[in-house]
Image (cartoon, rainbow, N blue to C red; front, side):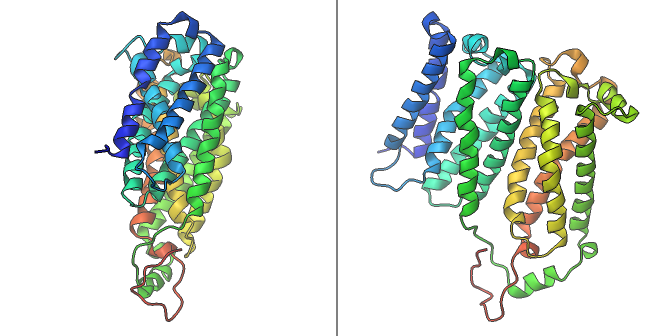
Length: 376
């Protein structure tokens, strides 16, 4: 009897420790170009074996190959995190010297934990639902937001940070992993979403309410305005704004923002130029009925903010960050509270849109059956 597909993918992913251990003990494979060559061969071999994990003559969603391939790289990420925190040893030494030296930073360690725990669990859940014929579109969008946010901070952060002068050939294997989440997101966004059963009267009643008569949405709007202000402020801080407030904040509250690794600076600029416009349109969506795009984009954004804030908070406290760049002990509570709220608010917004979506659904034309399953 053939084991479930997710079990086969897990078995393939568990080959990663053995491959890393072998490379760490074979000197001929520890030079920059052989490392890149081995990455291409191993990832290609994993991709070639994936068709044998699925039932015969079964039509497979192309996204399966993306998710399954990422399972392997996420396992490598988890090994990297565990080795740097001293739980294991003997796997990543060669790769940090001649592959991707920046993976030893606190930000990369937290990023690796996120990949190896959250992303890996998400992939196995998606693959399980995929082959059970269940919907996985929302989970896919959650991952896509997280993965895209990861890459648009990770790659520029390496290039402009202190590791930019020591980029090895292995770094460029990140390019396809930068492109794939964008492609996957475009595929998922283009697919129809299944909506819960909501009567036309219920939709009409919800959409007649003003923002002031919807206290949860009003509170979310106010908190989103606060998140916008915080994003603008920290964007100015990393751009070396000469205001005394910015100077005080970066030296007395979040010195991690000036860590020369480059990741925190890039992240704050991503918030300023990408998160800020999205926060603005979300406030519009909470005020304007029938904005069905809120149901997808809030999930996508929640994934992105959760990933970036996990890495940012963790790195600003991690022992691998130099002491002078860590959050000062006497400022720990206000700084961490603000950063946790910045991660929690998009998640709460996505939860609100998903649990009570009537306000965001398109108005139902007269004569349509109230019991008909509606798709927007």
